[in-house]
Image 1: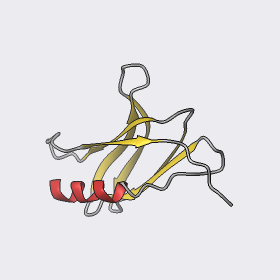
Image 2 (image 1 turned 90 degrees about the vertical axis):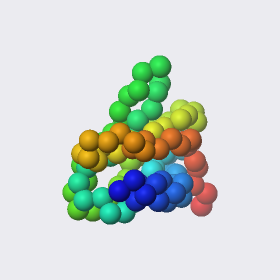
Image 3 (image 1 turned 135 degrees about the vertical axis):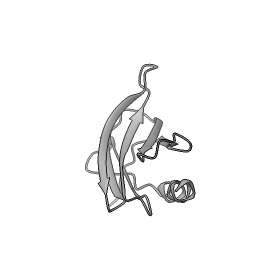
Image 4 (image 1 turned 45 degrees about the vertical axis):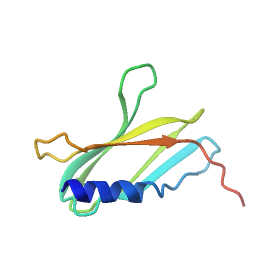
Length: 102
């Protein structure tokens, strides 16, 4: 399960950024092999870890999170796999808004 999560982390590096406004960040991916768990999009705005959005995964590992950004910042994807192990459950990535060109 740990290796599946790490392989999914690599796929998350292929993030799709962009959206309707210039300050939108969209994170999409797939946690391969995950049958059940909760995925959280988190960040630390004022020295406190805050959950922006969450998604209950049951049978399908596809996910999409969309959030508005004012400036680039560090984000975390936290996977609560319900396996009683916190080892390798969080991925850190740098998110920034991106303008889609016509």
